Length: 534
Image (spheres, rainbow, N blue to C red):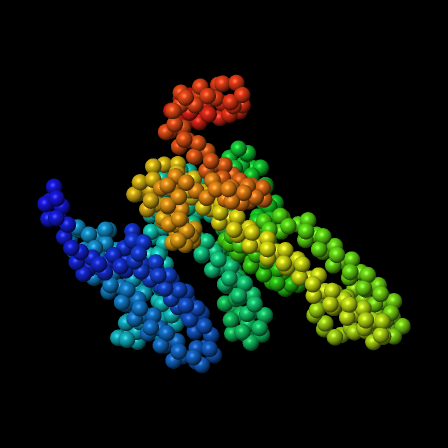
C-alpha cells in the first residue's frame, strides 16, 4: 500500500504550482483573491476613464495620460489572458479534455478576455473612429462576469430545489444560502450608492456640470433603475424573513420599516421629477437624493453596533443632554438679562441668546455674537469652562459603550463558533471548516488557536471563576450574548450525557432533596435527544 502511494504521488509541475498560486478557486493561500480584486478595480477605473474622455475639453487636456492608462490596462489584461491560456490544462473546467487551450479560447469567458484587449490591437492596424474605440472598450465591463462565476456556481448549488422567492431572498438578505454572490451584490449596490452620491456632489459644481450635464442625467436614471429594482425585489422577497405571518403583512412591515422607507426615499425624487417636473420647480429634490448615502448602513455592522450602544446608554445620554439643555437655557436667560441694553440688536430676545449660549458651550465661538458687559463676559467664561467637561460626557459615554459592545460582539462570536464546533465531531475536516469560518469573521490566528485548544480540551474560559463572572455580566447587558452562552451550555450538557453513567445520575436525581423537578426534567430531555427517543 505504501509503495502504491509513493508511485502515484508525483511531484507538482511548474504549471500546476502556478495555477495553484494564481488561479485555483479552491485554494485559500493563493493570490487569486488579490488578483480578482485588482482586476475589478482596474475595470472600474477604465469605466471612469471612458466617462472622462467623453468630455472633449478634458480629453484634449489629458490625452497623453488617458493613452498611457489604456496601455497599462491592455498590458494587464493581455498578461491575464495569456496566463489563463497557458494554465487552461490545469483548470478543472478544461482539464482532461482534448485541446484545453482551444476550449478556453472559444469559451464564453475566454472570448470576454479577448474582447477586453481586442479593440486596442484593432486600432493599431485599422483606422477606427475614436468614439467607436471607446464603445468597444466598454466591453471590458463584461470581465466582471468572470469574477462572479464562482459565486454563481455556489449560489446555484446552495439553492438547488428552492423557490424563486427564496432564491431572491438569499440574493438580497444575509443568510446561509447567499454565499459569495450575496457579497458580490452588496459590493455592486455599495458602488452604485457611492457613485450616485458622488455625482450629486459634483453636479453642484457649475464647471463640472457644464461638461457632464448629460452624463449626470443618464447616471441618475441608471441609479433609479438599480435602486427601484432592488426595492421591488426586497418587497417581493421579504416574506421569507418570517414565514409565520402572511406575505401581505410582512410586506407592509417592510414598507413602514426604517430600511424600507429609506429605500423608497432613495427613488422617490426621480419619480416626482418625472411626473411633476413640467409643472413644478423640483430642483430641491436633487439634494434629497443624498439620503442614498444612509443605505450604506445596511452593509456595515458598525451602524448596528452604534444603534445598540445608543439604545443601551439612552438613560445616561438623556441625563447628560438634560444637564446641557438646563445650562443652555439658564445662561441664555442671564445673557439676555445682562446684554439686552448694551446690544439690543444681538441679544434681542432669549431665543437669540440661546444661539450664543450653544456656540459658547460647545467651545465653537464664531464671534458674531459676543458680550461686552462685565457680567456678560463673566458668564461667558463660566459657560466656556463648564462646556469643555459637559460636552465631553456624551462623547465619553458613546466611546465607552462602543468599546464594550464590540467586546460583547466578539465574545458572542467566539461562543457561537465554540457551540457550532462542539455540536459535531471535531475531526480534521471540521477543524478546517472551523478555521475557515473563524477567518471569515476576522478573528486573529492567536484567537483561532486558543479556540481550537479549548475545543480539543473540552474546556473554556467561562468555567473559571473570573470568566464566569465576566460572562454573567455580559449576559445581563446583552441578550444575544446570553443566548449564545445558553447554546454553549446546552451543547456541553449533551456531551456530558453522552459519556456519563445515565443510570447512576437518574438514581441520584430521584433521591429526595438531591434535585428539583426542573433538574430532573432537563436531564430527561437531554437524555432523550441524545438517544433519539421520542
